[in-house]
Length: 207
Ligand SMILES: [Zn+2]
Image (cartoon, rainbow, N blue to C red; front, side, top):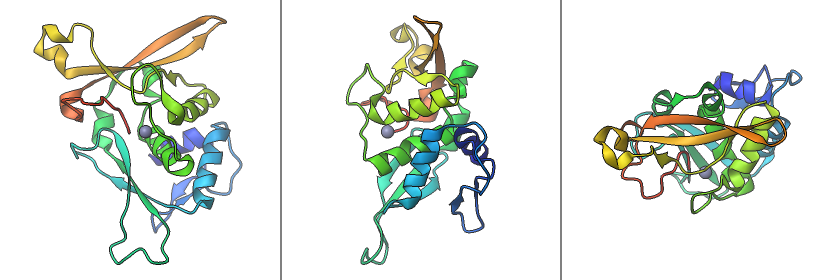
């Protein structure tokens, strides 16, 4: 994930230090996204404590999610805490177009959840849009020259009702402008039974 966050931010010295604290490094950015750097700088300067937790194999975590944390010994004088859970195993089950895969990994998932905490954004309630959170993440993808997430919700493969095999597989659309008018679509594909989220009341990839 460190390597992915370096690519997204363009900060070559970004790392987690010995105490697990995310450090940006002191080098100048090389490529990457300005919006991503601003978001992480806001997170660092903000009032909330953000904890990143490895939730690999947790069936309740579909890629990523964030929840408000609770201090064990009372919250008196302590900052509000948020726990970002990442299921790294889920990301390893994703296949599909190279261009879509570059735009969807644990690093991008973390940026999405951090945006929820920092800007208090919400995800869309229904299909047909990427949502205000992904809007900023898509700007980062553009700045990195990557395809953008076209939808927030994943959908079953066409013809899913026809076979048990297809019924397990879902897809998520990404796209990139090609020339003036055309947009080219790229797909991510995964087995929803392995990743979790089925039955899918909300069909969400990364809350
Ligand atoms: Zn979300």
